[in-house]
Picture 1 (cartoon, rainbow, N blue to C red):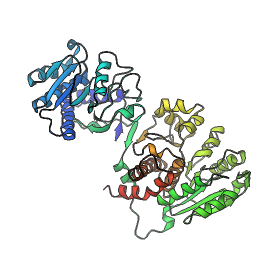
Picture 2: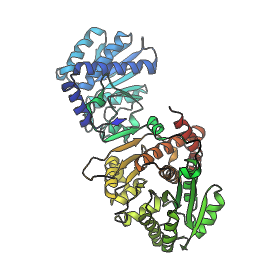
Picture 3: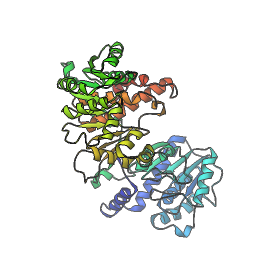
Picture 4: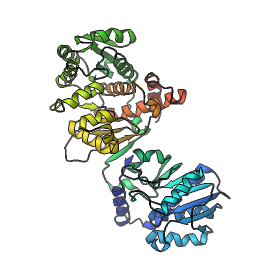
Length: 510
């Protein structure tokens, strides 16, 4: 599903009204009706229920006037407060304010006690900290402990960046119109959205033909990428993954990547590790093959480059970096493999650190590359730090993808995937993943993602699709693990154990 910025939504609104002839007053009526419908479905019959609708003087308030009118006509005890001078209400909002007077809703000066609140104070065009009287209204709703349904976006959340500069509504449900807004998926604003409901409010927005600069990748998208296996298939049809990594004391990382790749459907997996680590990896893995490589001080040495390149000729995808060490010889070996092997690759962990030190190392690489940094690694790739990345995750993902000409999976809450291949002057589409939970913030979780993406690449999937699907499956497996164990006690192995269930569920979506 497409995700839009505030400016893109304003343009779409204008085109729907001006080009397609959809009356603005009807769009506002449909928006309010959508919110009223969600309220009724979510909270049951509202006859006699005290509902307070907090409205601003703009179009968001106009949507709120419609909600108040419809709920009052349905038997709810509705109170409406207006944050600002009624003389400032204009256009379609003015029409619906006039209609409200005859519906039986009570006009009050401030937000009071209620069983349920509707936030229609500030819309997607609002920026910065809410001023009075909006700020007081937000605080009163939040302090009530009662459910709050936000109209289009929680007031106080920046629709483009997710920033919160002052007070912001902590919504139970957000009903947004046409498409989700980008800031709804970016911290800290994402935590204020609650359950997200998208309503098209009676217009076919996709008919306007605008390109998407961001998308929300969902279960139906994942299902569409999972092609059923042929009945006469054999292991060679599903690809051979070569995992390069491991070092003294870090044998678990390539082991977990291998287990994940096998669970995600790879036909064959080989782990290439320094001799010391290879013995440990071989003892832990029954279904995967292993390969012992030259080492120096417990890590890969530069002498491993040639045997790695020879092994890669027999493989279909690489996973480079898990547990690989920052020693110079290991960096040389990992980057040497990436440069010399003409097959798709996932680059993670210490291979990313090696790349950050030599940002031109992949220049001229013909095969697709997927980078899977966490914010700290992304910061090093961009010459900044984790805080700089987290302050604008979308921009960071786009810049990183463009700089390295790769598909970038920026890990974290609502993992972002961005495709940096293609012309440098085009807007790079960002795919937003919403599976996953805080329990996945545990050692080895990233290694499991690397293996999953590697398996999809080895099976012949394009890097963009493999990265989006991999992030979704990884998060879905984490959600399944959390449903059994809770978030606090989860470890990476629990995520890996649920990959098969995640894939089975997605394959059954159709």
